[in-house]
Image (cartoon, rainbow, N blue to C red):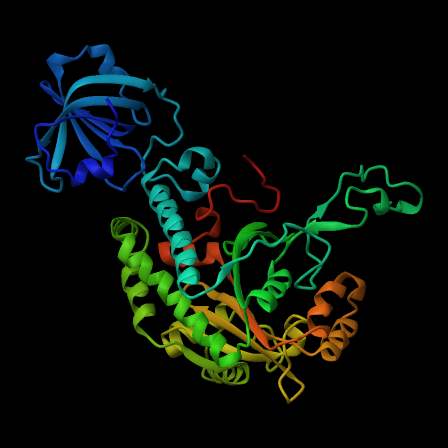
Length: 463
């Protein structure tokens, strides 16, 4: 008999029907006459209760029904007399598909997330991580649906590249050479390497995405990116996923409109489609989660220039506000605590900060007429700080080339990028959203390593 998913069993009112459920044991408790087994198959945060009469099954079978064991249960769907559940299965046949011995690492309740990261391959079966990764799936669906419905084209950019979109040089190298045998003077013969030149894992698909925008009008990328940044913090990963739309003929105000509309759509999608999982996380992880998500959807985002933001922070310091990282004035790069102060304490709603000093932003951003600031547009969120980084891109060939030279970058690595400014250049803009930071916000989790199945961080590349 074909199995029925737990999510469908719990919705069914076809009482009296014989069904088959398969899944993993969450809990098993017993009295003298009956055993109650909570079974979950990952399709929902909720378990289906299996009721098994003691005298109908062998005692040795019940001994094998431990937390984590995999079962197949055939029985009658019945209306449940217990509060909090509409139906249950009265078991006629139980088969142990996979026993689970007593050293199963996920048995005990109240384990720390740090402990569970050691068992990333098994933590997926817990209620919390089941909820997180169902929400992650839904957010991916929301992203594709939003851009499809708004006329964007899904555009696949390369994972292996010779260019550094951010200009920071923190890239993972890709090579087939034995770098332990580099030859005389530590010279690396990249001309004998697989690609004939030095290549790396991409830090962003933006530059290639701009090429797509200048041909298709509006594109978005959604794929893995990599940063060899030695940051062991709750907000950084070495491998993460990015969403990067690029749009031709878009100015700064239109870009900020897109950023706000897009992220509100994603949050509303979670509220509409992940109600059970969000309710669980609201209860177990962050009791203000639902309130925070609803407030983001309802509130208009503040649009604030960098200069105004610095003035607010300086006034806060004069008023006695203490920051771990000092507020040094105009030209400083804001830390997460500064961004969160603006969002959580001063405005009490999301902020789109714009017009940053050119020295702290990437080479491709369009400069304002003042020559000092660039048309960057960063969305700052409660609990997260920066969740989106965007800008109007410099479309003028000469100005872009000057910026590349001023920053000491190798022009030859960007010849193809410069061609878009040489042949039929157009105004355009775009942004990047770190997918894991979105999931971190929507789930209320505190560490970015807990919203990706197998985190890659300094000194850690397990599984």
